[in-house]
Each structure stands twice: as structure tokens, then as C-alpha cells.
Amino acid sequence: MAADKIAVIGGGAAGLMAAVSAARRGARVTVFEHNDRVGKKLLATGNGRCNYTNMNMAPDYYGTRKPGQVKKVLDCFPPEKAVALLEQLGICPRYRGSLVYPNSDQASSVLDCFRTACTGLGVCFRTDSHVSAVMPAPGKRTGGEGTGGSLRDKETAGWLVTAGGRTYPFDRVILAAGSKASDIPGADGSGYVLAQKTGHALVPVYPALVQLTSGDPFLKGLAGVRCQGTVSLCIDGRVVAEDTGEVQLTQYGVSGIPAFQVSRQAAPALEQGRRVTVLLNFLPQWDREEAAAYLDRRAEGMRACTLEEYFSGLLNKKLSSAIIRRVGLKAAAPAAEWSRYRQQLFRQITAFTVHITGTRGFSAAQVCSGGVDLGQVNCPSMESRLHAGLYFAGEILDADGLCGGYNLHWAWATGYLAGTHSARKG
Ligand SMILES: Cc1cc2nc3c(=O)[nH]c(=O)nc-3n(C[C@H](O)[C@H](O)[C@H](O)COP(=O)(O)OP(=O)(O)OC[C@H]3O[C@@H](n4cnc5c(N)ncnc54)[C@H](O)[C@@H]3O)c2cc1C
Image (tube, rainbow, N blue to C red; front, side, top):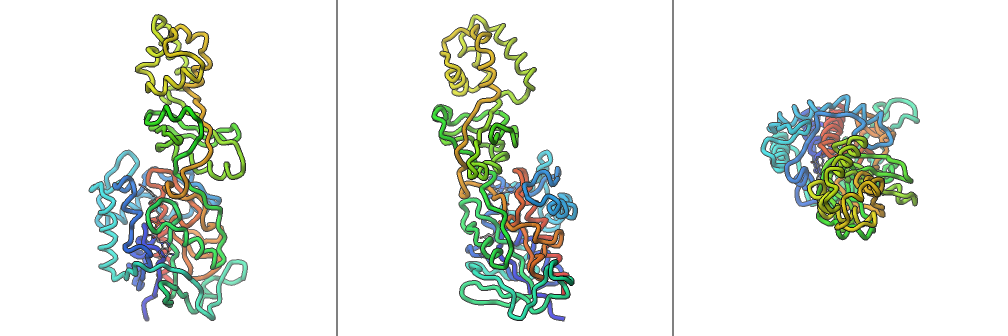
């Protein structure tokens, strides 16, 4: 029997994993990639070190409209599986807490291992090939749960992929064209259009894991501050997300991992005209009572000092100057003022408000929230519920993970499942 012919649209993390998984099951795989080479985004991951999974895995670490579908995928593909599969390709894991990197600390070595595996398995790379259409071959009857009968019964002729003015026939197609996040070439969102043209619905797409912007004038004076802090994202005054780590204050707003982690809800809320703020707690190591007790004790012991001296060694100098000014005091004021302005100062130290006006947009984002509705995709096979023989993998789907290896894990998991299931048929 002739081998299945499978097209993978997109040579990113998900597409490469799908290609290897399908080819290992005997399929003849062609990867279409519109860049001049595969894996460009993969090279940029983890600051070039590629944080490729996280041993602390749960559906809660993903944003999606269909958490049950995400759970089905993660249940079939835990982090141990990602580590084992990548190890088979030659990637020795290095654990930093629960985060996993290649021991080489080079994202390029992860890409090299996939390329080597693909070459060994006879995967064909068609680079510089922009896919402009993916459609069922004429005469193909499409499946779908609502149409009665199983998808398999209804599957017939196959799929046509148009790239660079030519149309190629395939038995099955895996759409792994990623999102429109980052300024890395290739991230143009054209995969969403391909999915929509096959009738798939999109959950609205927004930048996520992205810096938050603000017009607050005091930020100019805070540019360059890096400090430990908790960032709480508030929508209409209610805290909806929170994260602690190294906060970076910039001229345009708030950056750093904690800002990224809470950012996914900012863009849609702003679009709906809702009020978005972040509260910064610069003493995240203590709860409120402990922080208050410490600050009171410190004030008592430093009554003879100035406020500037009181804050010296406690907070970054630019930050303490802004806090003192926001309360309407002077740096040279006596620290004894602490007792009079205690509440206001405490609020500025533990709930410093920044009004958010936007995000740095798709080009600065690491991922997108939203994407192909998982309700129209069978999990864990990753096959379309609308069309037999059409599969989805990676960030094109409506699932975005937190920083920490969750997005690559999603790419490996869905790539593996789509590759395996697409090649099992026939
Ligand atoms: C700077 C940065 C750092 C990151 N670091 C991490 C990290 O350390 N850990 C982590 O888990 N996640 C990280 N991420 C997120 C992670 O890289 C992505 O979630 C993941 O790469 C998505 O894989 P994918 O295969 O779905 O999409 P992509 O990697 O984007 O691959 C899609 C491919 O499809 C191609 N393509 C698109 N449309 C077409 C078309 N019409 N025709 C032909 N080809 C097409 C694109 O050129 C691209 O090569 C990072 C992201 C960025 C931007």
C-alpha cells in the first residue's frame, strides 16, 4: 500500500514535531514554509536558550475558551513525554527548577536535532513556499459531527494545497502556521485565513505575553528601574491576574516577566472600553501585615533621618523619589513624617497604580491569545470536526500558555498528536 501523503503547513515547532511524528509512522511528509528556512521563531525562544517545556504542567497555565480540550491534550502528552521525545532526537534536558532547557543552552541545537531527524526520515522541506489555499479535493465529502456518521466513513479523495502558484494533492493536511505574534519573519497570521476559508471559526486574536503601555507622565522618571515586585492586573477595579518576579519600568509602561504573565486580558478589556490598571507591590516578599510592621519598625528606628534616607536601601532610588513625590512630600522631609503619611506611603509602596492604555502589540508579543476554536477540533486527535483529514497544531489554536515553556509544550503536544493521528489512517 502506498504511504500516506501528508502536508504540514508551517515549519515551526508544531510543524516540525508533526512532520517527525507522521514520518516515523511511515507517512511521506512535505513541510511548506514561507520563510527561506524552517524554525525561525524557535531560534528566538528563551532568549536563544529555548525553554522547551515545564515539569509543572496544568490546564490552568493556559488561556483558552475550551479548557476541557486543552486538558485532553495535556493528559495525553505530559512534560515527561516532551522530554523523552526530544531526548530521542538528541536533546539532553537541563532542569532549572521546573523549567526545562536543552543542556547545550542553545535553541539552535533543538532546531538542528529536528532538521537531522527530518532528513533521516525523508521529510521534504518546501521553503520560500507561501501557502495561499488549502481545500478539500473536488468530490471530497467532508465529515462533521453534526452530519451524522463518523468522520472516517465520510473521508474520500484528500486535500489540495496551493503554494507559489502550484497546487499539490495530499491525503491529509496539518495546519501548523502559528500566530501573528512577534516581529520574526513569517508570523503574518495567514494561517488564520486558511483555517477560516475551510469554515473554521476564530476566537478573537489578541497579543499576549506582551509589555503593557501607559501614558502616566511619572513613568519617564522611572525608566530603567528593575526590581522585584508583584504585578496585579485590574479590570474595572477588580484584580483578574497577578504575578511576581522582576518588574521592569520603562518610558512607555511596564515590562518584565510578571507584566507578560498578566497581559493576556489587557488588550480585549481595553477594546471593550474597560478601565485597565496595574498595581505594583514593591515588597512582594511579605504579606500586608508583615510589610506594614517592617515599615513601621524601620520608621521608628530612623526618625532622625530624611525620607530619602529612609527609603535608601529599601527601594530603588528612582522609585522612592516617585513615591515621595506622589504623596506630595519632599525627599528632604523628616522620616518622622512616616506616621502622618503612613497610609498614603504604604499604598504607594504596595499598590503603586499605573493606568494602562494598551500593549506593545502583535510585533512585540511572544504569543497570541485566541485562534482556531478548539470546540471545532477533536482533541486529542487534533482532527477538524468539520473536515476529515484536516488537522491543527500549535499556536494557531485557541490556547496560549504562560511564560515558562508552556507554549512550546503546546506546540510539541499538538504537533505530536496531529502527526501521529494523521498518519495512522488509511
Ligand atoms: C521571542 C520569543 C521567545 C519565546 N520563548 C519561548 C520559550 O522560551 N518557551 C516557550 O514555550 N515558548 C516561547 N515562545 C513562544 C513559542 O515560540 C511559540 O508559541 C511556538 O514557537 C509556536 O509554534 P508554532 O509551530 O505553532 O508556530 P511558529 O513557530 O510560529 O511556526 C509557524 C510557521 O509557519 C510559517 N507559516 C505561517 N503561515 C504560513 C503560510 N501561509 N505558508 C507557509 N508557511 C507559513 C511561519 O513562517 C512559521 O515558520 C517565544 C516566542 C517568542 C516570539
